[in-house]
Image (cartoon, rainbow over all chains, first blue to last red; front, side):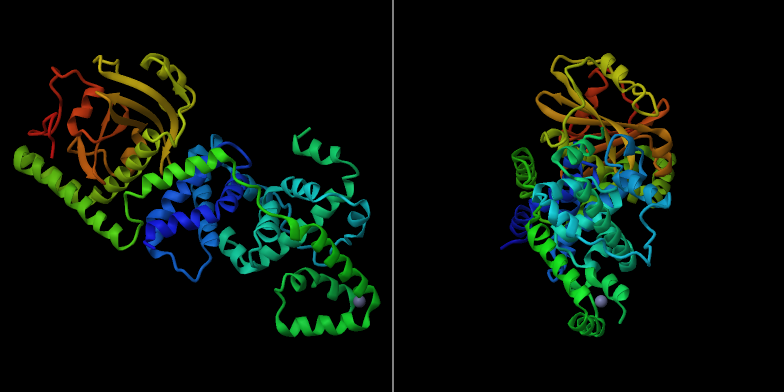
Length: 191
Length: 279
Ligand SMILES: [Zn+2]
């Protein structure tokens, strides 16, 4: 298979994941399409240096993250993604980063008793604060290792672990509150 | 091991991310602690019932189509790598040719200026050309939607006002066979620009308007006024004028200048630059 065909095949194979991550990085705004395309063009140009032992998905995620960081640093932030900046500002404000070493995983029993649906879990993940949603999605939906997540988000593994820890606990709090669909969908629409 | 320490390791344990030693010690604790056994069972149930079923949302059909169009457009080129190096060197050669033309035809004074520019700013120019060509391709292939279309140049100028930190002044359309198809706020790398898509005799021409300050930061504001480069088969002309800078992309060389100028107008180009058959 020539490199062009290989690139195309890999892109098509992982398109759902690439699209989902673009949406995440652009806060579900329409700019996600621009972000995805820009990342694909960059990746195509750099495909010669792509090492096959690395997962294509992780490699693409890293490029997408770089595109979103570049955009957020530029003036386009107010029109485009901005997800990176919002997320970093959120952490800078002292949220989320605290690993609260004494805290324990919240027992999932309440969630199990409520018998929420997979759809509600998916919706609750989307309602997590920006930086927490990112690590939770990369782990729970994309199945990335801690090391891969660290490479994609550009933070050490310790940060990945503390964000994931907190993200999972916040998710459980959201799901415990989800006595019916209404709670989550109200949050989803920012009401 | 105490229960709190064990529970704090539940997540990495179930993620398969614990070191062998930590894993053995946790499993040792689990084998003799009914409370922790119960909790880890709940964790496993939670995973099996919910997390294991999570998949990324399917990409919508519109996105699939757009990506497929993009990939088709790319299939004419080789992906980056050894092929990329070849293209880069031919690009540099094109810059050299353009400079050469100016040197031969521009006389000694211009020659000195050009040589200085060539040594210092060619990399910036190639980067600007690369970004401009990429945007041109996306605009003309419909991969970047217009923010506005079907407007006169004056209406378009008004639309851009307030959306960018600089004024966008567009030429009136001096020719019947010239159409302004649409515009959008776009970016050449990290430079926010007004992107305009024209057609001249059915040929695509993109004009990008950017703040002069950014153009200066690229080191491109000096002489010669018009920088000309061929990148991946596209002709890119960059210049600054009246407080803003422009980058013009087409496959029709200097003819694209007719987007702004009537054919009769005398253009302030480097000597020897002709509106047709440039390079
Ligand atoms: Zn215990």
